[in-house]
Image (cartoon, rainbow, N blue to C red):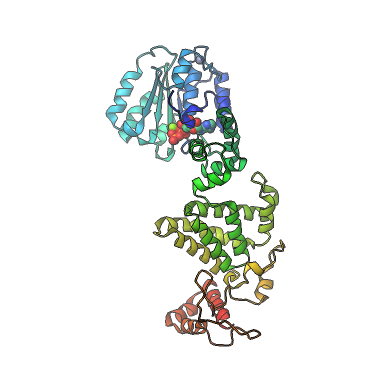
Length: 463
Ligand SMILES: Nc1ncnc2c1ncn2[C@@H]1O[C@H](COP(=O)(O)OP(=O)(O)OP(=O)(O)O)[C@@H](O)[C@H]1O
Ligand SMILES: [Mg+2]
Ligand SMILES: [Zn+2]
């Protein structure tokens, strides 16, 4: 038999197999148990969350040979045919390819005839928002008072595009995105039945990458099975997904916490060596920033399902709440920039630099993290931090760490202060201060950001 992809093979056959969506299941099951059947149902939600799946189960509930119930038998001819999407009285229509009013009229002409075998004729219209406004108008009358033997099941990812006249004639069910926990819980038994071994961490990586869609999770699992050939390992999944290993994100944040610019760039260089998907990398960074902010606000909100709770709590103590908010905002806005940029690595590094430069504490002037003991203590209040002697992230008269050191530069003599001779920075500061545009901006600018930037440049130049 030909191979069937996991998402199709494991489509839930009844309500008990559906993951999540409890709020929808409860309403549907209660209504079916009490035989309170409506004639039009609308399922909304993002891709791969169970709209078509629930609609097909509902069609079985209506038409199972054992009678209308919330537990279709799944063995009778009708149930089997509906599961395979080939029952004569189940009309699955893709509205995206049948948008014209003529198509809708054809459909409505057939509505009047009795079902061929089943109790009800079920019209399952997918992506229903794609119908033209004429089509919707043609549908209104029948949708309000359809023949006894007709049920309409609509599904759409974009309910905003439906006319209110349609919405008000349907029972509406909004399917939620599935959380990583729900996805992991669902994938475990699937793997067991498929007799495939998988590391728990690999499953979490897949569940995170699926971003709420069970179909995406199952597709990624398919991909991981082919990629790994045997036991699915977290390392391989990370490689396959192009996401950075979690240690890299933590290393990046650790360097950022201590304003260690060379450290940040070093991690970025290591990351670049793995040719990551930078959008995914940024997403990982953002989701970790979110967890750090949560950890600061309410440590109990951080669970340990990824085995990193201790690390998160420790790191959370090293940032100020303002920094985390700012980094998150800069990162979230930067997603667009990343997509537009021709050089993803450069765009990603620009975002990291921006986070450091615009930090309320001039982070780029802090000492390198390699020399900073990781105390795990909460961050110092801003006044205390400002009183700390600011040091450049790397000495201004030596080459930055990502460049080869210039062989002609002997560096400061032992015991000599490194800043005794004029540096390139001094002239940079002088140029900066004398620039008429900068002077006008400083005079007129009411915010603090530019003033802080000038202070930062001045403090760097004065050392
Ligand atoms: N809630 C769920 N529980 C279990 N499996 C699910 C769930 N949602 C989706 N799936 C899996 O994903 C596959 C696709 O789901 P389904 O066709 O119901 O998605 P959909 O919401 O209709 O998506 P689309 O908007 O792309 O049409 C199913 O075959 C099933 O394997
Ligand atoms: Mg669908
Ligand atoms: Zn049945």
